[in-house]
Image 1 (tube, helix red, strand yellow):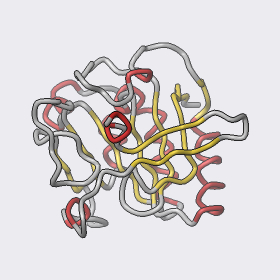
Image 2 (cartoon, helix red, strand yellow):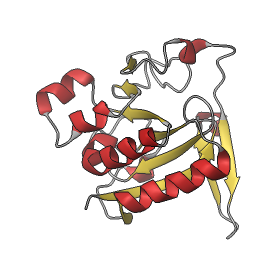
Image 3 (tube, one colour):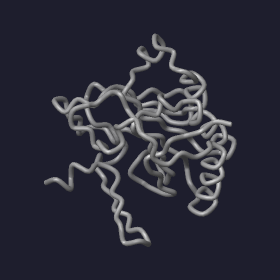
Length: 194
């Protein structure tokens, strides 16, 4: 059985990729990009340790409830938990969902490093956005991407580069109020700082 250490998850968002999607943030990253929008998700500590099969069950329920187009994996660093995410990604595709992954590692780095199961995760990924965030190279011309050095890789025919630029490119922020009164903010949090 494969396991995941999750930082957060949302059953439905429109700020983390094309269409209505579930979003799963993993805990832990060794990249340490200056200006990271999720600094609480960087420490390699146990947060919410769950089985990949339970996450897939959660995703299936979210899909039926919200009529999702896909799921997005963010972090933290998804490639550090590629084994568990590959299980979820394969199951997501069997449900008809697209899979989008944001990684601080470039494809070239992944090929050299051969992190456990990273190739397996990419096998079930439709869109990979790769590269470390560089605060000195802000990119305001493409959706969902932070800096000009980051690249979209279309690994299947499901999407093409139109998703990056189609219509007005706007930095979206979502605020979700939870039953316990707490708030979860996702998307492009820089807007909240201005």
